[in-house]
Amino acid sequence: MSDVFFESLTRRAEIGANSYLLGMGDTRIVLDAGSHPREEGDESIPRFSALRPEGIDAAILTHTHLDHAGSLPLLMREFDRAPVYMTETTGALVRAMLHNSVNVMGYKREELGLENYPLFTHREVDRISSRWDYRGIGRPFPIGGAGVTCEFFDAGHIPGSVGALFRHGERSVFYTGDVNFEDQTLSKGAAFPIEHHVDTLIMESTRGAYARPEDFTRKAEVARMAEHINAALERGGSVLIPVFALGKTQEVLLMLESLRSEGIIPECPIRIGGLSTKMTKLIDRFAGTTRRHFPNFRIIREMDLEDTSGRRRRRGQRGDISYRPGCIYALSSGMMTEKTVSNIFARGFIHNPKNALLFVGYAAEDTPARRILDAATGDLVQLDEAASGVELNCDVAKFDFSGHSTREDLLNYVGELRPLRVLLVHGDAEAMAWMEAKIREKYPEIGVTIPEPEQRLAL
Figure 1: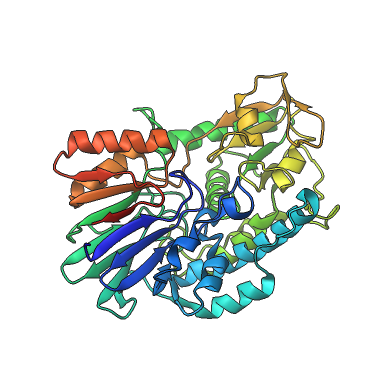
Figure 2: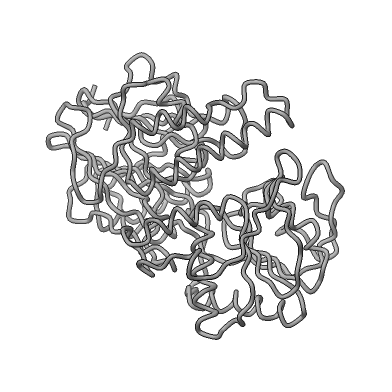
């Protein structure tokens, strides 16, 4: 067998519970340890049982989102001597996200009768964090103790996110994690290796099925969002922007700050709530040390935001938020998942035709966000299975502010790097199929594979 191999630890070739095993020589490295946002129990975590015969020497965490980090305590419980490498920013953020996951699993235990929940505890999260080994960008370090090195490169996805370059002798593998080559309002675009020789590129393909309009510009998209905000405020209504707590919240807040400071939208209260507040405070802590726009700008302090995170109305629900006209509400979660602040608030919001509901991120199938986007004005929308439907009368719009690279940018990177082989991960079947076909068409000399779970590939 080759001294370099790859195995997907996911249960299905899709987005969710992302985790992979990379072997180089005698070293076994796990790349990310995610959980699946729409599954429960064992189905929500990677196949860590596949690691038991050989064990692992180390793990790396590319960034904080739970589809890459949500099962980290379970991996570290199974292999309690393996160090985990990440950036310091990721360490601070992932600790908070994992503690929040414990709370969410506690609620699910009570509401769904999941007796094995929570899968890990607050005490366990605190204990494992002492084994996290923080590494800077652009500074190669040994990993596994058998001649393997790793080097982090800024991935431009969220603060602290990285891609990882592994070398063993003459062999090299680059794992992108989640990447965005475009500048965002908060984060600068990825600074990935081009001059390095890379044998194998393990590349995300999230947006492989999405064809962005040829005339798209980010500036025009921001202007279109401002038009919807202004129209709602002029009608005497308010604006709800469902946001993911980490990354998208801070991106949107800085976008709104720019629009206010330039006089494009009026001065009005901006209210945040849920996990977003805590994550924004943490990102503010690293305002002067991460590769970003607005260096040293601390969002919470300088934007004079109104924090709506109030007392719990009942167990498992946060957000005693009163509606006021003339406000912008940036509330988590981005997909309006049941029991989250944005979902609860929307029940008394979307019936009002004066209001506007603006989506700025991904909305998976069978989520309240997707049901709203698929509905027509006047339809009853089921926001919570335990409650009756709500009539949709407000303005609804969706915007392209994705933290993931376009498929064209991913293809261009393949062309610039010219690896011998590309492994496509982190995408649905249609997205990966498009990427595979285009790589074969544009770069026929490059091998391309969509790894299947339980399949070990010699590289």
